[in-house]
Image (tube, rainbow, N blue to C red; front, side, top):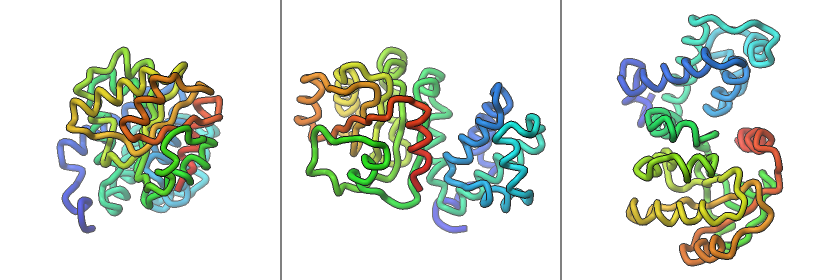
Length: 251
């Protein structure tokens, strides 16, 4: 291993805590197989890739994720989590870097973040929007800007419950990412929150903002996006789970 990955190991207290939280979420979930699939996809692994690392057949992973097999035991879950982390080490630890910010943040932050991923290769704003059926309403000149990841948040929980000092953790390993807000009605409060983030974080801002749940953005939200020079898009995908599935399919 080289780079970031060589500096990380499972004896690292931070890594151990993140691993424990991932395992805990799987164990405590009413649908552990679905939770396993979520984490596998968040780490960017196929069932075949993960099975090879774990030394099991891909059908075993598939059976657990689909619910055809009963909930996995603690030994299997421990091996599952270790395999995700070891593979991420080989890739430079980029997923863990972002996850540690969220998983070790406040409870309110963890509740507000629905998904967070880093890409192994950059994708342009225009291609990203195409992949999630989104249309740019401002910032068309940023179409070729590269994105290195995304964060999906419940906008109501973020604005109403998450302490402002936790906002910086939404950026994961890089600010060159899409900030996707679900449950948006007018688009005013998310843009106000982003403006507040910039004020408290030395001007840091996402490379793209995407709204889910609205068809038209409030004029104040549009004006903030224009003044702050942030490209803003609206996705036409109506169901949150369908949006998350589409996002996780981006390789």
